[in-house]
Amino acid sequence: MSGKAKNTLIRDTPGDTFFLIFLYIMLGFVLLIVILPLLFIVSASFSDPQAVITGEVWFLPVRPTLRGYQAVFKNPKLMAGFYNSFYYMIVGTVVNLIMTLLCAYPLTRKEFPARKVLSVIMVFTMYFSGGMVPTYMVVKKLGLIDTRMAMIIPVALSVWNVILCRTYISSTIPDTLYESATLDGCSPFRFMISIVAPLSTPILAVLALYYGVGHWNTYFNALIYLNKAELAPLQIVLREILVLSKIDPIMITDARELAAKQGLTDLLKYSVIIVGSAPVMAIYPFVQKYFVKGVMIGAVKG
Image 1: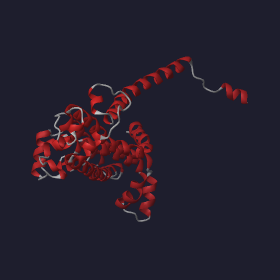
Image 2: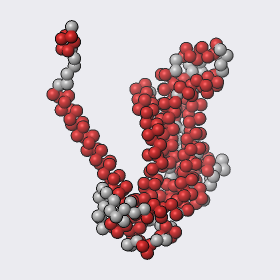
Image 3: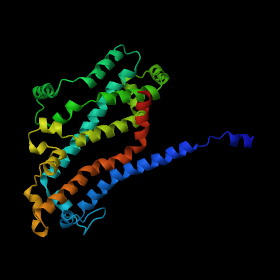
Image 4: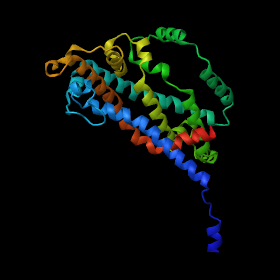
């Protein structure tokens, strides 16, 4: 029996082996494309400005220094941008998750007669929208211009994320559980809060990552809806530094110690990129274990 069992084992063919080798080579190539620029930016952010200008920096810091980061954190605009971005990300993500769950759960209940019609209407908005000008007029009529809610209310819900959440709930929470809870006197809303929400932690964690990254990286809505500099998110400040090359004079307090103003400008750009990316990169490991599970459920059964 053991000999027959060994003979029935599936062995990789030469074609499979060649494909795996080719796949690993391609993945390694992609990894190099992604990681080499990142290593350069990290090294440049810790290097001496003169070394950055002269091209001495490759993948290790040259004459390591923290001057770039010291200048970054001395800038009040950057610190205000950090506060605003964290506010928009945290509050906005909480609002997004609440709205997504409130919309996704009713669409899973077969006894809800309008669920198919509402699903069609919601999907329709994924392909056709009112456009930027009508949306701006609505936001203005609601009195949201130059308020923090202008960064949260217009993007309070993503239809695609509602579909992912609905699919997850339908495929993981059986109807018998709802029937048992109903017999015990549990209302539909109580069932959603006490049972559906805790059991949907994996997909909610994935959606929190999606929404959080979206809020952290958003800048276009701030350009349209916000005129007050004190409400601007971090990405607007980064845009001024990276795209428009606007450097606040307070960030050049140690200019005499630096080789040149251009060196400081380049050093600040690299430092700001790292500072702006670090929060999202720090959040990802905490939701990584839920990421694949949540995405695969939406992809396979969506």
